[in-house]
Structure formats: C-alpha cells, structure tokens
Length: 597
Image (cartoon, rainbow, N blue to C red; front, side, top):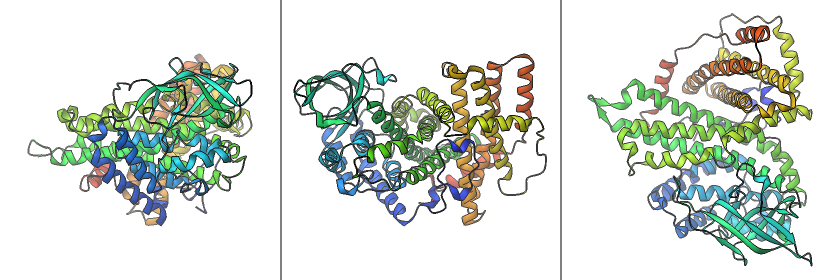
C-alpha cells in the first residue's frame, strides 16, 4: 500500500486521483487472498448450506454459527489482539464481511450487527476496562451484542430519544427507563449498546447487560423479510446501570452513535457486494438451464443486458468499497487501541470519511435492490416461488435502504458533510468553484480524438466533477444556510456526488488493472468502465439541468445552461456491444469473476 495517497474525505470531488493512488481488489496480498478463501468457504459451507433453516429465527443455530465464525477469527477482525481479537486491517475486515455474506440470511444480519454496530461502539469508544471486560466475549461469541438506538417515535431523529437516565443519589449508577424498537439480535443478546437522555438533555451512550433487573424484550416482530433474524422491542424499566458502563462521555452519545453508524454504513456496502455476487451467479445458472424457443435464455440479448448490468453495478460497488477500505486503513494507521484517547483519535479519523461511508451505503443498498429485482425477472414465474433463492432475496434486500439511516437521510448527510467541510476550511470547495466559474468564461470543449486507453472516459469524469461542483455552488449561493431545507435539490446534488465517486473508482480500477496486467487481461474491466461512465455522464447532465431549472430563470438560467452545454458534450459509444461482451465473459463460468480471487 506504499503508493496509496491519503486523500481527505470528499477530496475526490476536487482532485483527480491517479490509478496507483487508490486501493482496488486487484491489490489483495497473499494474506488477503487466504482470508477471502476462508471466509467464502465458511459462507458457502456453513451459511449457504443452512439457508432453509435460517429462514426462521433459531437462536441456537445463529449462536452456533457465530461461535464457529469466532473460532476462525472473523468476529474479531476489528478488535485488537490484546482484547481477544484478530486485529486485521480494514481491507481484511471488508473481505470477511463481503465473502461471508452469501445472500441475506438470519445469520448474515446477526453477524453484521455482532461485528458492526453491536461491538464497534466499545471498540471505538470503550475505556480499557470496558474493552477488557466485553471485547473478548464479543470476539468469541460468548457474548452476543445488539444495538438499541431506534425508539417507537424516533427513527431518523434518533438524537431526540425519550429514554431517560437519572443518576442515583450515591452517584454509583444511572436508572434507565424507556423503550427501543426494531432491535436486531434482541431475542438472544447478552449486551445492548443503547442511548438515553441524562437529566433530560444530555444524549449519552450506555452498555447494558440483558440479565440485569428491569431489562426485557417484547415478542418477535413479523417482518416482510430477513425472517431468520431476531427483531424485537427492548424495554428498560428502572434498570440500574453502573456509572462504569457509560460509553464515552456524558452528553457525547451522538459522537458514539454517528461514528458507529458511519462504519456500519460502510460495512453495509461490503455486505451488499457479497449479496450481489451471489444473486448474479444464481441468475446466470438459471438462465443457462432455462430453454425457451429452442435455446437457453442466456443467449437472448435482453437477458445478456440484465446480466451485464448486474455485473457492472456490482463492480462499481466493489470498487468504491475497497477504495474506501484503503483510505480507512491509511487514516487509522498508528492509533494504539490500548490508550485512553484511542476512541477519540479513532472517532476523529472515521468522521473524515462520513461522506464515503454514506455513499457506499446508498449505492450498495440500491445496487442490491436492482440485482434482486433483475434476478426475479430472469427467473420469471419461478422467481416468485418461495423455494427459489430470488424470492426471499427480493424481500430481504428491501430493509437495506432503511436501516443504518435511510437512504434519504444519507443523501442529506452527503451534501451536509461536503458543505460543513467547506465552511471549516477542510475542503477548498468554494475556491475551486469560483476558479472553475472563471475558467468557463473562456472554456472551449476539447474536440480532439482520444488516443490513450480510457482517455475519453477520463475527460468525462473530469467534466462530471465540474458539473457537480457548479451545480452545488450555484445552489449554495442561491439558498446559503437554508440549502438543507431544499431537500429535492440536495438529493440531486448527492446523487451527482455518488455517481462521480462511482465513475472515478471504476475508471481508476480499470486503468490500474490494465497498467499492471496489460490491456488484454483488463479487457472486461475496461468494457465495464466505458459502459458505466458513458451511461452515468448523461445522468449528471440531466440532474444539473433539473437543479438549474429549480434555482434560476430567464437570462440567468440560459447562461447556466450554456455553460453546462459546453461541459456536457460527448459522443455516445456502442454500449450494447460492450454489454454483450461483458455478459459473454460471465455466462460460461456463471459467477462474478472480475475480482482477483
């Protein structure tokens, strides 16, 4: 990872990275490959093999699988060795999350909470004593964790929690009262990482043991999907929580919650990569065996289009997730987990990439929803039948756009994060926009023929950034501090930012592959990059037009559209032929095969 550049969060909007400066799946080393192989074998041999059993809540089965995962070191990837973990880098942790996720099952959800939002609050913000007490058990699955943030009346507005915590007269414990809703793992959790208002106004995080008096759970929720996961309400009634179990600082629970959710969102992106790959493989296997009009349906153009588009979006998701993993490894390097201020250092480091974490969550969850929908369509009527994988996957996938912060909330976070970084001087956003605006006065489109590999796509990505910055700048100038109230415009800007990160991540990955292994071995990577960039660029153009039409009129609008027209010029490519080429590379092996291992 010596050549990787430590970009700031959101800096991809302002700077053009070089291929060697980002991490890609083709950069996995021997240890990464061994971890990938081991995690995938566990996912297929232990999880996929029990798919039918995992359709119903079975605490003993889930805990048994967690213990096996713990024995293999998968639960402790983000936990320091001194506290019983395997202390792996973030790339390895991401690989484990992806490869174990052989589709969405009761276990994959349980695993995601155990290794993510259920243990990360203690990993990131626990005192050395709290880490010593709880982390070894979480790494081995002797303890099962749950994350209790949502309340019946507070979902996205979680910081307005009504659960209360009152300090006892002797100052030894807090008395906790309240209810939490939709809590995964609640039916068999040993620990609840929860939040309450101290003195009615100080939002604070607590570690609560399920065996304590006053802790109870309601009946299992009857859900649309993920039937094999435990989801219950948790009730706290005069629960005495020792002051030693305050997590972080009084009144600083938002720091614990938001940073934990950032990592949870990022991990969800990895989770969806694994699910998408399984769906693609299952869909292609069916398409090869289904004979209609005298030949397998995988030979028909519209089915090839679906196969290729699924692969392209998985590739985009995968490229973004591992690019982000490389950034997280760089920023967390050198932090000693045994130090008292390790949590603050880690929290500060992770906060820098809140933007990328939200991008991965939004893109990944929407990619997976696309993939499950197309899988059902490829299977036709059989995709609607319970005995087929696609039916359950279709229902199970839908939750990903809701938990870890809805995609609507995450879109608001993306733009808010960029604007706040600009106001704090962390990103020279307005300076770059002002300079760009001046350049446009004399800008002339480059009409020369591109000669180098993906040179045209590089220009399109550069122009997509400029269009996004101009749109964001014009919107900020129009509404100033009230921009957040214009949610439709904010969502459009967020979608442009997401597409820019996807376009550039794919492009750089394909270029890196070609420079390392030669153009022939990178042929499908290059095809994916060309299709994605050429499809995404007109979307950027259209979103910009929608923004300008919403914020301007008359001569001002005409001026903005004229500038946009200069930047948005491009010649379409034959994406149909490239998609067929991509599909034809996948159909023979019936699996996603673009990653190194």
